[in-house]
Image (cartoon, rainbow, N blue to C red; front, side, top):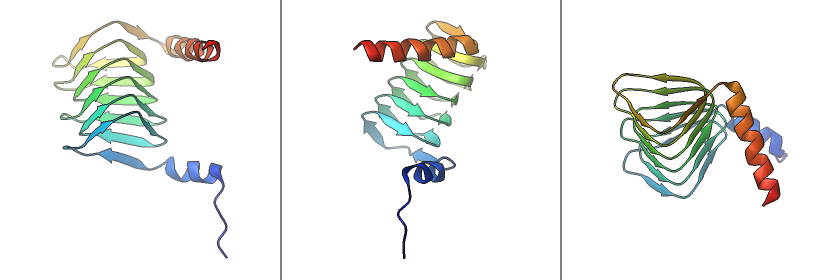
Length: 136
């Protein structure tokens, strides 16, 4: 009567979804999202998303971010790795290194750290991390 879904079909069905971590919510630990994710609360841990990341004006990330594309309006303390466009809006505060294919920063945003840009940089980081994981 009911057929169990295969793992690949489960991944496909969540790819278009959006997860929201609302204001007043604090998550301690790493977060992995297959779809888009919006953060208006606090994450104390690393965030990995296979799609777009949006950190709202009240959102706070205390850890590293890895995603395809990201818009930051809140505060990030940690390394940000984005394969495509990283956009720092409004009163965004980033304390940490940035690795991005493209970067756009509004004049009111604050960024303290090193910036590495271009598609080659993002690919090189991924290769280096895979090599380090194999050696550990």
